[in-house]
Image (cartoon, rainbow, N blue to C red; front, side, top):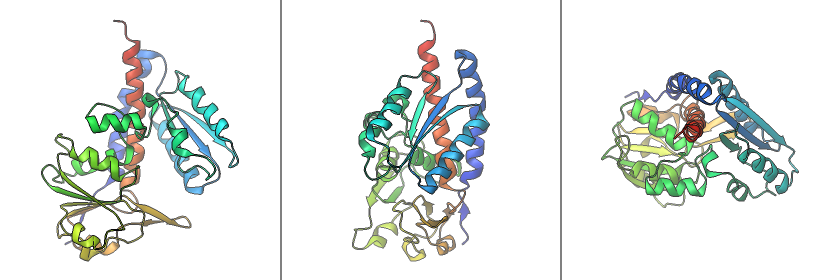
Length: 291
């Protein structure tokens, strides 16, 4: 068996194409395009590349982008000043503090300072609470992208068993909550495990859909995958500039669907960031409409 590729790059392109009309509509209705502001602190190489790609995505869609870069020794007060300024700026609909921050800064405390309605990442505690309640709110970008990718490739999810390896705030926990919602693209039975489990394969071999999100290179091997299962390689790590996947290459021989190391989850995460930004602008436009 050779797995069908879960092509995140092609789907992300389609999503961006569909967003263009919505960007135009908001701009015409309000006189201001959707706006995304990024905050980058320090010299982390991958972060610099990711932020540059996000601004390129904005430019391609007609979204205004604002870029604040602070030195690695920036104080918490310096970051707070940027967040406060952008919370109050009507031209900025979504704010993204690029993770990670230098170790002396409390990233989560600074993240909580963002206006929940301008939460580009969908990870503010208020929005995570809304997610648990099933209330409309910005959704975490990577989990939302994974669900979109599975749905677009017609991978059966509703009523099926999804195993997520990794319990992190960025992917594992919000994805588990999203997949249990009673919606057509979710409604799954979900198990969340982690690298501290004694026999990880005993869990992963039961999965109809397996999401690897632990950031441990080649952690998922072919003998840990049910034949014909969908496998999403969501966790990555780096060896210099080389991206390493949580899923070993050999998994392609047993999986029914597999997301690639490059062109899978990453482009979908960026696409859903654009979706969150446009949705935030649409909420602004709705508030501006006369009653």
